[in-house]
Length: 154
Image 1 (cartoon, rainbow, N blue to C red):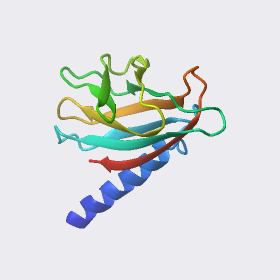
Image 2 (image 1 turned 90 degrees about the vertical axis):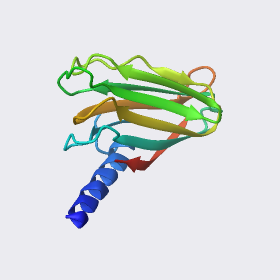
Image 3 (image 1 turned 135 degrees about the horizontal axis):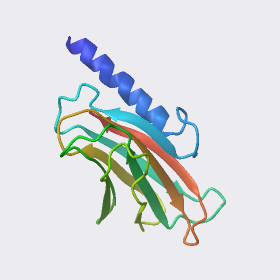
Image 4 (image 1 turned 180 degrees about the vertical axis):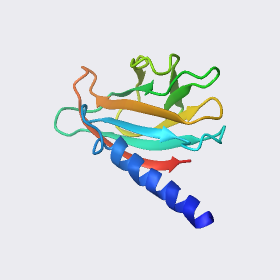
C-alpha cells in the first residue's frame, strides 16, 4: 500500500511538471491543469512550484503574473488559492466561484529576474481540479523567458 501511494504521488508529480510546463494542455504556453488531492481526504494538500524569469531576448524580467481557475463543482467552504512569493514579497488570490469557467484576476509580483515560488492550495477537504496561467513580463508587459519546475504536489 505504501508503494502504491508513493507511485501515485510520483505519477501526479510527473503530470504536474508536464502540465505546469505547458506540455499537457492546449492554449497558452504557460498554463497547466491538475487535481489537488484526488482522493479528497487532506485539508493540507499543497502544490509548490518554482518559476524562473529570465531575459530570453525580449527584455529583462520585471514581474510575474499568475491566476487560477477552480474547475470543480462548488462546495461550501472549499476554494482554491494561489500565492506567489519572492524574497520578502508575496501576493495571493482565490477563485471565489468554483466551476464558473472564469479565472480569478491576475496577481502581480514585482521581483525582477530570478526564481519566484508559486503555491496552490485549498481551504478544506475535497478534491479540486484547477487551471493556472503564469507569465514573466518586462516593465512594458512584454512576455519574456519563463521556466517552471514542481517541488511538491501533496
